[in-house]
Image (cartoon, rainbow, N blue to C red):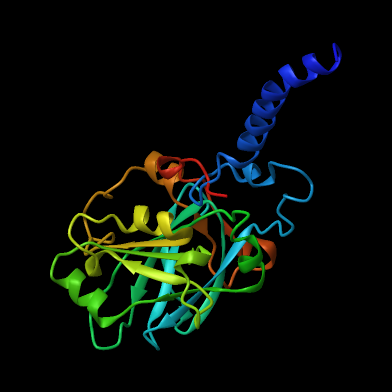
Length: 254
C-alpha cells in the first residue's frame, strides 16, 4: 500500500500534464496564419497528409469576364490584363494576397475593378479538400452594383464545420458582407463557422490613374501582395510567387 499511495497522489499531475500536451498540439491553428508548419503539430497520426502549398481558384462567373493580376519582378510592377477568361482557373500560392484586375464585365461596360485575393494556408481541416477541389469564386451583378454605389464588398469562401453543413450539400460556403446584418464581420463569422479558404475584398478604387502617384508605396506592396508573372511566361516562373500577409496572421484553426 505504501507504494500505491504516491502513484495515486501523482495521478492528477500526470493527467494535467497530458491535457497540457494535448492542448499545445492543437492550439495555434488559424486559416489566415502565415506559419504553415503549425499544421504539422501533434503525433504522426494527427499530422496533415496532404502538404498542399497552392490553392486552385475557380472563377465561375460572370461568364466572359477577364481576370488579370499585378505582375512584376519585385522592382517594376504593372497589371497583366485578361490572363483568364471566366470560367477559368489558376493555382495561387497560399499565405499571400494578390491584386487582381477585372475587365470586360458583362452588363457593366467600362467598369474595371481591382479586388484583392487573399489565399489562406491549408489547415488540417481543409488540406484534404484543397488537395482534391478547386475553390469557386463567383462575382454577381449585386456585387458590382454595390461597388458602383460606393460600397465595400468582402466575400469569404470557407469550408464549413460539420455542424454548419446542410445535410444535402457538401462543399464550401460563401459569406458576403453586403448580405449580413450591419456590424457583422464576415471574416470573423466565417472563421466561427469553419475554415477560411479565400477572402476577396473589392471596392471602387482605380489603381491605374494616369499622372498620379501610386496609392500604396513599394515597401507596403512588397510586404502585403503576391506577384505573379503572366501566364505566357515559360516554365515554373509562371506560378504565383506570394508573400505572407502578416497583418492578418493570427492563430490557426484545427
